Image (cartoon, rainbow, N blue to C red; front, top):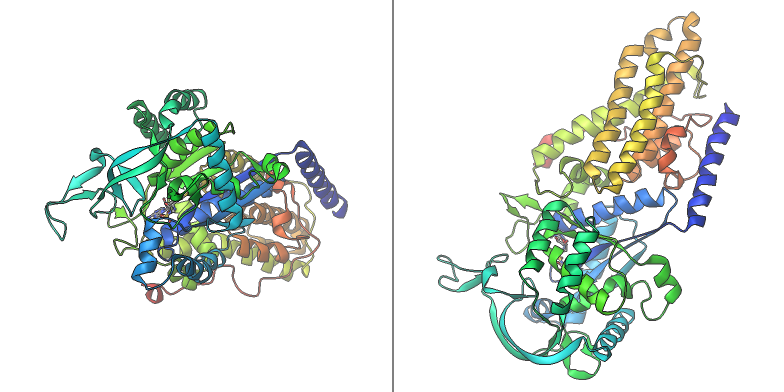
Length: 542
Ligand code: MSP
């Protein structure tokens, strides 16, 4: 038994070393969040998805890096600070320390770095980048006249605006996203020659169909660029909360131009070539509302600077409330800890990633969350873990038995474990996190069915069935081990407990996920003192 166990783990180690030596690098970044307000579950959704992908790749032995952070410049933050009688820096410091960094704890994000756009490392990189574009002729001075939405921090075309009939802004031109009036700007600005990148961008979308995903977002981006790209105003001179344009200190850099550069400033652009080479290019996860910035402006900026474009830009859907995007400005934001305080961070992570097809919009409801918690986590997975560990304790005094001759039913568990391991990995590579979870759940269901059919409690009544009982429980523990490893990116806390309970060695997050099916059991189990997902009374939550 021990020899087999060691063999499988030595195999995993060898594969890890091989992957590291091959230099597989996986750098994933979330958007950086505006600090004008506190986080809601829509923001937490982007974070959790990126964290699950990062954890998965890390457990494949890839050289993984997860970056997140905060977007602190621009008029939106400046106005919020002024409205709160404070300076933008003091406001940002307070929000970052009291709200945004604590969010990462609340939902169990294991990020490798946190970048703030007010940090010196970032501001220096922005200046270096801009100066290079200026020196290379990609920037010119001109006059901007047009509409601006401070909520979006974006220049708007007439198509993006609507005239409202009702409410406070009746008869005015308002932004279709925020429902607030836009402002007419007339300023001397610096412009980035983005129009020059129209053809290279269309070639990029054509030659690399996976550059923008999913297809709905890709099509929208292609249509947008095909309509023709204008040059982009990249500086503002009417306020000073931003990075100064290096050759003209009377201007600050446009907040999106500044913010997009976080993805490279955080990995040493211009100062640490080794780190930059090791990480870049990144996989970028963004909400579909900001896909244009990431799939049009950002690659154009990178092309101008002679840098590689991101590996992929994936635009996920929105969490909806009453059919509309959840947002603080519409007072529909739900704070993540409203959910985690009752259900825990694992359930939060699992719920949003399993209930919503990644890439599509999804509605949140307390009823759906409660029902899935109970059916899938408490009854499906948690109960399976409790039953199997309790039976090994009871019938074998905690020592995990070795499997004897396998029947068809036993073999099916081993082959299902292998199949779901492989299929879940393929789904993750396609950003289909919900599919990966549904696939893994086939093993949860298969194991529950197996236990019901094999009736180990009945086998235990007769010593003549001892060998069969050994095989059934060894097979069940094997399945649990596979589940613990496969689910660890999504349910890090529960799977760590399960891993310890079934005698897994070392931290669960060090286990190879692509070899999850190889694990055949530690020496001993120790029963779970409380269920992985305790019962929650619905009344408490609504
Ligand atoms: N600061 C910019 C991003 C700059 S990246 C260089 C920004 N910040 S944000 O705080 O408004 O939004 C951050 C992320 O949260 C975006 O990906 C956005 O799509 C996501 N979400 C905000 N509300 C959301 C929902 N209701 N549902 C899902 N995601 C949502 O944009």
